[in-house]
Amino acid sequence: MIKKYHPDDAVYLSDESKRAAAHLNQVAGPAITLFKEKKPIMCGGVRIYGVGEFWMLTNDEGRKNHIREIFRASKEQIELFIRENHLWRVVAERNEADAWLKKLGFVESKKKLFTRP
Image (cartoon, rainbow, N blue to C red; front, side, top):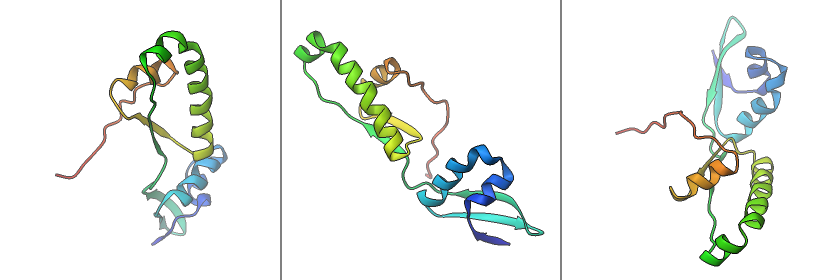
């Protein structure tokens, strides 16, 4: 039997520490729970949001003379953006920004992204 997803279903399959993530899954997009003999055996769905695409503008003078201030403000504000918007993955708008994200403490994911042909 398939029913609309509820966070308690995910907690049943995992543990209480996943409650916040389980709730986010409920509000992030459509999801279902598959039941067998009245017990959840699978939860799944699609998150419609949760990915942040960062962008930044600066110039040669700013990068040369104010890099520390830019770094501190970037780190502080990115952490705030992540918390306030429940982001679970971030990407950079341009490949050149990848190095900046790494300096800010992010690591490159080895996860594959899938598309349909």
